[in-house]
Length: 304
Image (cartoon, rainbow, N blue to C red; front, top):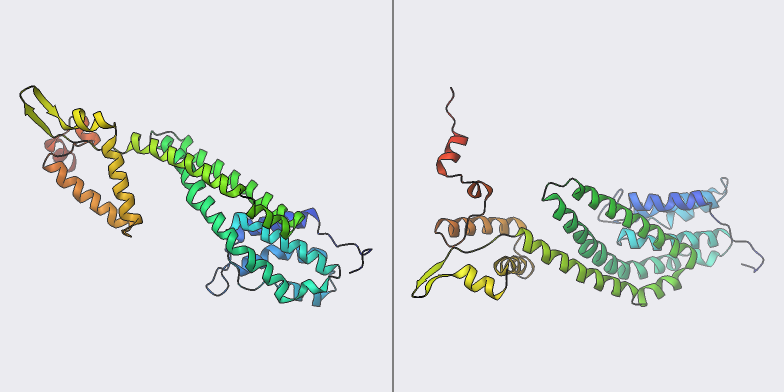
């Protein structure tokens, strides 16, 4: 393409529609042959329809066929690949036919989707979502309606802004900017900081909402030695909830115990230890003075 040739640019409306198509329909027609391939095609369609003339059926057909191949990445950060391919399609429509080959487009998509998947999955699924959920659950467990609202508003707002900024990064700056962004270490610092914050929040949640204490005590010459108060709490308050949480984490992470099995184990072990009197019963009905007679009355009321 000569230096005087003007690059065809898609309209702002087409660019915005392309981003929204990808954001909301990245997994449309999801299948095990192409995964997000059809979703990627759907995101590219507004760009292709805008930059190619209506009578250029062959050009539009070839452009659409370029984006039907296998594709899979984390949708929010992966929007930068969609933006980059949109910019490449503008250059192809303007005469840079060397970019139209399968190898050129595929090498860009396949080369970037792996690293972006690793970064995006770590940040969105392993850090951001659990962190916001822990904040929302901390409010919701006390009956505060703001809990779920806070989670939805923050999560949707963050992924909208993050997805759009990543799309425009790829669209305006190109592949070099994306590679520099990945290699700069900024994402690594963000993930590290968010991970520390997430651990802090989860630690606070464990201390506040995981209830476990023992009733074991010993009669000594100096008086009663309460194992919970005089030993565990003296070493570290909320020590038993922390130990229980770490055991559950180890079982699920290291031993591959499913969440359903872990819940069953906790119910059985908790019931046994509660019956023999090794741990305190912290259920609400016990704290309010309820007993066996009250429970039997509640479930087997005689009809008057």
